[in-house]
Length: 137
Image 1: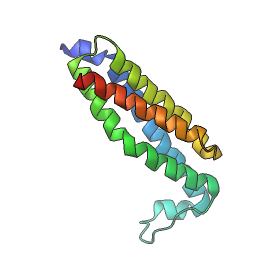
Image 2: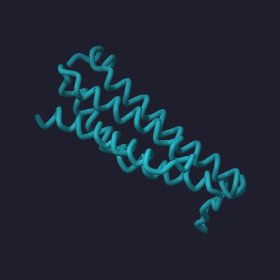
Image 3: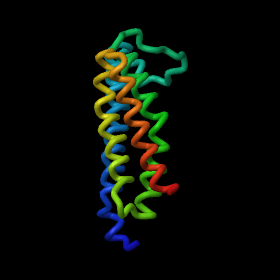
């Protein structure tokens, strides 16, 4: 695969977008924790473990941890598909499914909406399964 072709791969664009989503998770969690625990805590060494007690800050932390559980699998599968190519487009469809579901998941988690949030998580997992299926089959 030529460097120019791989640089313009839709899968690589989606990988870049996923990094932006990861950074958003980290910034949101940090901002909400700092709002509750103070800037001195954020700037300090954090030797004593403190967790924010607020509802939204706690949800943002848990949503971020949940995102980071499946993110390595997404990155690995997306890179494998970008290298191997995906002529049928199923791998790219699975990647978009994962990405969109992860976008939808965050506000659902922050709002505390049960069941639908779990369904959206399952949709994201299905996206990973589609990506893996393209590689395996």
